[in-house]
Amino acid sequence: MIMNKPLSLSDLIRQSLTSLFFFVIILLLPSCSTTKLLKETYSYPEVLPIEELSPNPVVWTKIQDGFELTGDTVKKQRVSWHCVRIDLNTPGLSIVYAPHSETLGQLFKVKDFAKHYHTVVAINSSPFLIETTNYPVGILKDHGKIISAPNQQNCALAFYFCDDDEAPEAESKTRTLRAEILNNQEEALDSKYTYAFGGFYTTYENGEYRKFQHNKRSRIGCGTSGNGRYLYIFATTPFFHLTDRNGLNYEECSMILKKLGCTKAMQFDGGHSSALLVYTKDIEKPFLQRKVPTALGIVVDK
Image 1 (tube, rainbow, N blue to C red):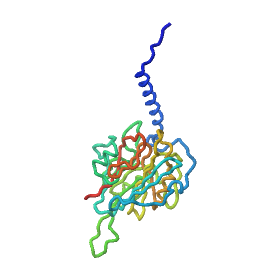
Image 2: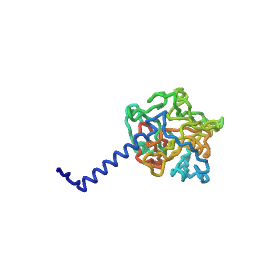
Image 3: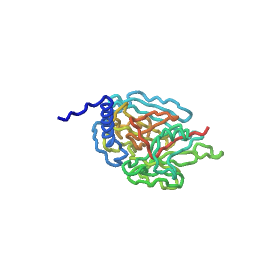
Image 4: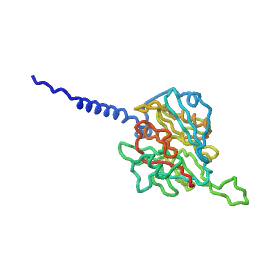
């Protein structure tokens, strides 16, 4: 009889760690909304009422001039959410982004992006196909330069400059930044729009929620109000969950954004790509956060 040699303690530990590693990988592979783009397979029919999504009165805390932060927890889903409200009339405010043409297709951490540009607020933006390419799926525009082509199936957040209507006629008017959510990214090709960032879907418009799959995930979204003067940057992530399946769905995020004052809302890339940073600090961060191909930042010159 041939006797098998007993495994040493180090061998047992190594095998256990290897098994755990492959178990985590198996869980994570189907978990990224980035890789699905237009098709999600997990269904959660329940939409929580706003009383559970935002149980406490909304209190905005000033970060600095023109920037306010609020947030809450959803105990039933074991998630938290935060939102930054930005007054685009803030003096010295401007938009930064990545990638530029020479770095297109390179993945990076949003934290590194935020540190590089000294952003007040930074998020990830466009989805991407992680199985085949690191290139973003959707528009990225800087002035007249199209860095990434539009995807007409999805929406976009665009920025443009306009004259300040509040300035007296006798004084020279200032050029102020405004934000607009476009239902079709090809609209962003119009010369009116200086910057454009591709997302997934418009989720709230004209007082109605657009219905999509009810998947509960980490989410990154935004909203607008005041004819584009105010931009809301929203993020939600589970407290801790390997497969990231107990977040919020599109409609629930939009219900919160509506309560916060938004008149229109949309979603960027969520899941394990989600990132919201204020002063380079992670405000919302999913477990095993991945690198991304695009990011949007707001900076203020001092």
